[in-house]
Length: 476
Ligand code: SF4
Ligand code: SF4
Image (cartoon, rainbow, N blue to C red; front, side, top):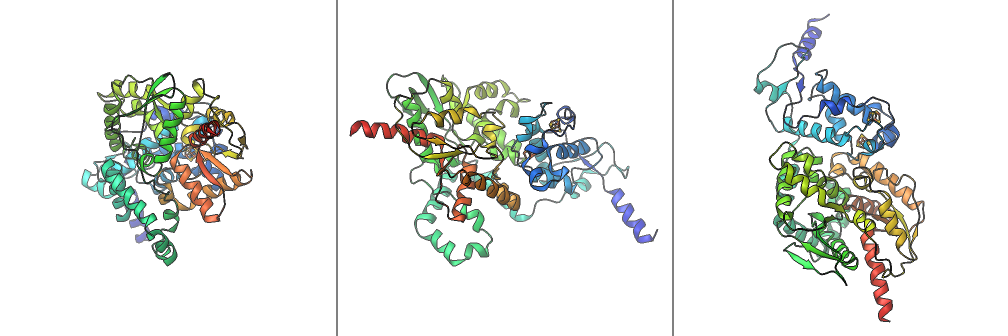
């Protein structure tokens, strides 16, 4: 063996394996509950795209187990890449016969990576190839931080925009101005976006509503006799870009005998933070929302975005080891996805007018897999007179949106988006119905790129239109 090879071997063996630290450690019990049966593989979008074991749920759990047991380090590039490539769609969790809570260990693994990359104190894994335990400064140096652009993006997105709703609204207004002033037209035509490699990201910018949903304690009375009192989660992007969906949701709830409250001081649910590995940021937002909705005495807290609903239902888990646990569990117990709620009460069918359109339903992952809500959206669509529901192939396969996945994994996101839109178009339906802003943006971006004349609509918007159609014909 040459001196150079010897030196290289020595350098490699001297690198300590960085293990999981105690704070937000992925549960060894959950990791070890996987029996490696492989029944989840065919449900996994990244495995179906790549055919690689390491890009499958089983492969990723193997990697987590290897870090947990000190066989590879948190600083392993394969580990980090696979934790990033996973969509957190939780399709694997929904089909797993052993009940492996995959989402919990993935989010904890990402949190560990982000803690390490942000320079938090690390600990050497119990077993190291070099044997020597290095000091904390040396360990910190072994995990390179994210590139500057990514740290800046995360700082702005996680630390500012989604934490302060006032700032988020100013940003949304600026985006709306960009769209309406001709700035968007110029940016697209001039090729500036192409130069900055931003044309795909920019294409997903939704038309920003001119009137935002600003929760100030408003109360919207029930139409007719009050059957329920509910509060609505306004959220972040839903309250600006998708404010019209909120208005439709309020009208549909009113039509179904609900008095609807919009409690002040609520904000973003924290889903982006939790999915992106900023668990503490998610907890901060969770505590704010718990306070905002506490003591209202409502029958349910309604959410119309699947990704938000899934996180809001998990506040109890996020704050489990804190003094907030009981309050968080009480809050989560009240959360109802709007489809779950409407299908669970006696839906007002009498006031639904005809809506003669063909619709295909694309299932948001955090509705179908994380919340296991699959029949209710179809029940609501089928209740609309004249609406023809055409089922698409792979309706529950992730569309590739997944938070900032379009930015971190653009190729995989584009492949999955194209696959979903191909399946939707094959039905010949003129509308793709969904229930999550990320999916809506991903699908609309794909359709726009292809110049397809197919709309993306929320199910509550279709219900609202049907109710309004009946009112309009009654007036004629
Ligand atoms: S996650 Fe579940 S389905 Fe997948 S290999 Fe493990 S035990 Fe089997
Ligand atoms: S969460 Fe989705 S992408 Fe990730 S391993 Fe499970 S099925 Fe695959």
